[in-house]
Length: 107
Image (cartoon, rainbow, N blue to C red):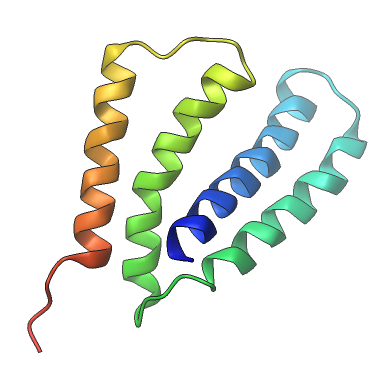
């Protein structure tokens, strides 16, 4: 459930931010902001579904998923194929996210 919540949250956040990008940088209609804001609200709600006792830890781990998802967005939506440094960086970020979220904790 946690991985699915992170992936869906990343897609919602990127889509919401892209709506603002399209409006401000690509001269799209301000109506793009309506689904953009809704998408950002969905993103915030989805992060509450992550199984973590602390919000900060959930958000920190999400950062790695966001970076990997942004690289996938770069390729899928913007048509720019990630290079090896994008790919290696994304893998490192996902490994860090996993360590933050599921690393052993002292009790």
